[in-house]
Amino acid sequence: MKWWADTLTSVYINKSIKKYLEDLSAKKPVPGGGSASALTAALGSSLISMVVNFTLG
Image (tube, rainbow, N blue to C red; front, side, top):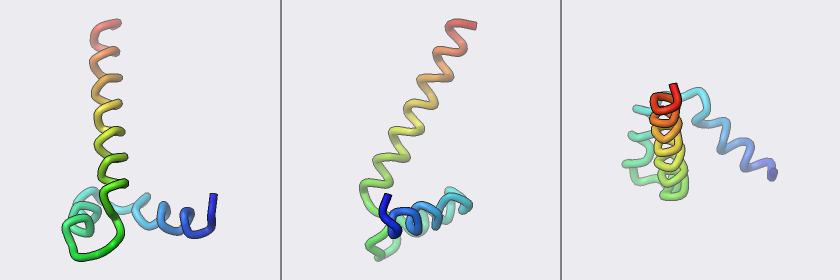
């Protein structure tokens, strides 16, 4: 991984969702659509895991 990717990743790893959403809605280049898509995919996969856990017991 490139050094700047480590830096950008660590910016939000310990921040709140509120902070992320505020920055996403601000007039800033980062975070952008890619990170919003990744968050949506992560939430979707977590919900699928929850359904599987309820279904299988």
